[in-house]
Image (cartoon, rainbow, N blue to C red; front, side, top):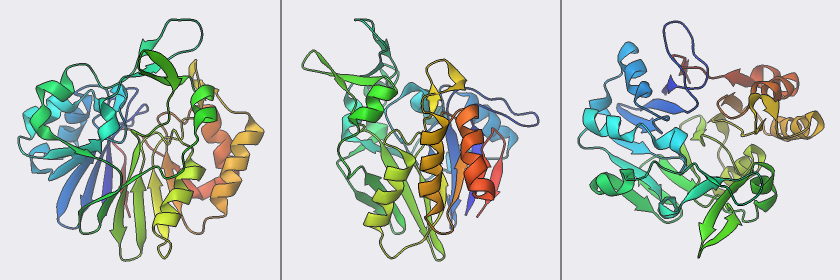
Length: 279
């Protein structure tokens, strides 16, 4: 398997970055897309990397936030056939709210789901897309503490409620020597998500996990939502899972990444626009 980072917060060489994430996956003799970042920038970087977006067989939306879905109009211009698989709850509206009545909309840019309705394939729960590729929803239920800590909410019957992250999904690719898993922001907690994957695939090794860990604070990458002790406790739990290498960035934040790295060492690698990983 080959994974190319089409867009990420950080960048390398001549590539550009933005707050978002988009990953190109070559699996067998086919190509797949996980998210599109916040804009069409992922497509510009794809061209520089020699990625032919029109050859992508299927795409996935990891969750219903703008910084992972804003580039879909550009993708649909470049690729006229591939379906995008997403959870049914992505239809809801999602917000960021710190205090008071003011909410900031952070969901899928308005109009995309309706304008391109024929391109989206909604999923309820777990689904095998094709042999070796599975969509895995959350099986653990109570993430209210994480939603509160990261100020994520939704509106249900005109009531503001903490996000239960039911719109978030992990995309699992099965190879002979283990699983390669993608969950772009890990809002439910990367350690919780790893537990979900291990429960769903009890006899399989997880050889790689790609995604942000959503540990940065409200003021951006140079802030942290969790203390060093809390962050290192998560890293220690990840260390107990044999062999997995974690490729992270985006919403992890630079401070949390450094704390995680102090525990995980070479089992943690940084993503950046233009990066390529051969697994």
